[in-house]
Image (cartoon, rainbow, N blue to C red):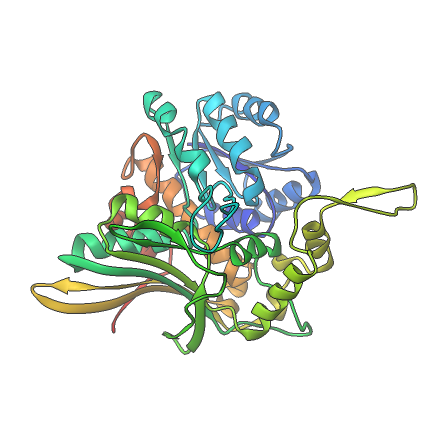
Amino acid sequence: MRVLLVGAGGVGTAVTRIAARRPFFDLMVVADYDPARAEAAVAAVGDDRFRAERVDAGDEAAVAALLARHGCDVLLNATDPRFVMPLFRAARKAGASYLDMAMSLSRPHPERPNEECGVKLGDEQFALAGEWEKAGALALVGMGVEPGLSDVFARYAADELFDEIEEIGIRDGANLTVDGYDFAPSFSIWTTIEECLNPPVVYEKGRGWFTTAPFSEPEVFDFPDGIGPVECVNVEHEEVLLVPRWVDARRVTFKYGLGTEFIETLRTLHLLGLDRTTPVTVPGADGPVAVSPRDVVAASLPDPATLGERMRGKTCAGTWVRGVRDGQPREVYLYHVVDNEWSMAEYGCQAVVWQTALNPVVALELLATGAWSGSGVLGPEAFPARPFLDLLTEYGSPWGLREQ
């Protein structure tokens, strides 16, 4: 397998360090708009299977040419969601498979944003599914940790743990702290703003997809491995759009443990218009400059990839499932916990980006060996879960199951 990895930030760098320990690929080209980041990621692994390149992720022709030049048969997208569609189209143009960790962006309903869906996450990609299927090509979408591993857990629960499923709820929580900062998100603030301030989507059988107000339906969820109770709220996320396509469940939700302070900060950014992506004009040394307020916020905060040495605690991603097995009610939580101290010592990567990066590498190996195969635009639920979970354990990062 020959891979083009686009994006050498925190997650992309973690991908290289995880993949370097596995033999399933022949070449991984690491490409970034900033060539220094790509070169640093490659230099750190010291493996001649890796090569650094510069590319603009928004330039479809340049990405397609880079895929062709290196004979890459798969593109792994480790950029933020703004670049999903150009990279998705570039892979199709070059005849390569495609894999991402977040899907094409949504747009709220213009009149009823907190009741009805507008353009949903992934709609632009699924609109082209027929083209991919006709070509016999695969786009594996939403294959990070959430979405990604959480979707694999949903498939596993449907196949092996339940006869009927009432509800699938993704529940994410952590007890991470960052020394020396009052506010320092452990993941891309650009993506965090996007998913947290958009109207969250809920799925109900018979009703379909609908939206609620941001931060709705708070609940306290008790996370395993010492993390403990965390208040979680509805957040827009891909699992709610992916799971019902392949798994029969009466209700699907996604709730994220953000914390009161984080929520209030996001609300303040929204109140001030600092969550907007449309450029505003500000004075500059050489005259007026157009800048995106959200990009300014992101540039003002520390790079999450650099926070590992200051971070303490654990992060947990998981899927809570309620239903019936052998005529009896059952409720389980399937989960994956990463301790930041361990991920820093073992890989030099902070826990959140490492956990995100692990799962696409596992998926790439399954595709390379033929354990997973398919065509069209498919989510993780479209594939058998057991090979993935077994390989995840082989990677030295086991998952857990708790009866509720």
